[in-house]
Image (cartoon, rainbow, N blue to C red; front, side, top):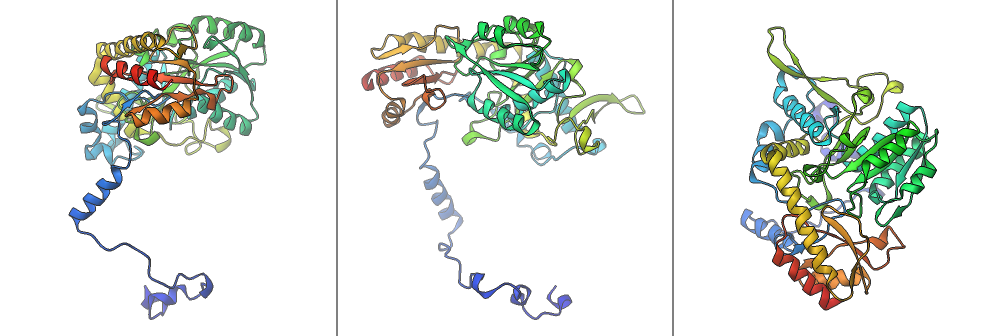
Length: 433
């Protein structure tokens, strides 16, 4: 390269850079280490983190500590999946396309919907995209979202809405559930969608059929953000009248991973099939009649004129979606029901056990899945600091997003926790409060 440029040394390449901004000294790098020393050093750094292998975790709020069967990592670590990229050439991407197709099929079965895309970046992204779909379908530009929806979902929705000139109004909650009376009074002919979650942020199980009736009476859409694991035992949103169903697939075989990457899912009725963002994998036959898979209905800006695109989402979380697919396939219908049932039973035991602790009271009376809120006699942040010293990660501080819920903690209980773990948590919490 130097010879071609007519230069004698590499420094000549940077001759036009002012002397004042050049580094002009050696980097302050640590002394080199052997492989053995590097492994010990990195392990020492890792040990500074609090691992869920060494503490009890009662924190959820959208990311949950579920058991991941060994088969999940074994399959997604295979090189043909781990290194796969966008399957633009179907003739050499049949494995990835089939995996996406299987994922879509499972999501449709779980949600009770007609069509699913190949996945979204995360739950909040899918939630906001669903709102834009509803606005396009109804030709309206205002949505109603329950305050009982995850605050981060509502935050991403607000960002999307501002750029698309969509008005967002929030519905109040009552006893941990979306206020049905307020909804009835708020739904008009200008509302594109009513947006709720199932279970909601407080863990309460919303009455989707009642919400759907109110929304549909004004020809508005019902968008439901749900915990996919809860659908192992709850009636599917599709059966309850939902038009679009979204959520985060993290509970399905994806680790906590410091908050990501996760995988959003989006499913809808067949009327929405050409508005679904991202990509859809389809099953077809080749010229010899053999089953094959292709990308189809790609209504995105990379494939059609930008102004006609339904979304600028142009990729998907294929590896995370594969993890969810392996998890659902491995667990099967009965396995998903069993895990969901364990979550409900253990959360109910924790709810009963904590309600007996002096200084702790339940905030809401609604039925819940695996999360519920309690009110303490001390600030949650202070309590959590003391719990961590006792080897316990406490619940989420609700006052961060809901000022009216001062000293209230959102507690999550998954199948990972035993009866003894819950008893220990109750005892330690009692000592603190």
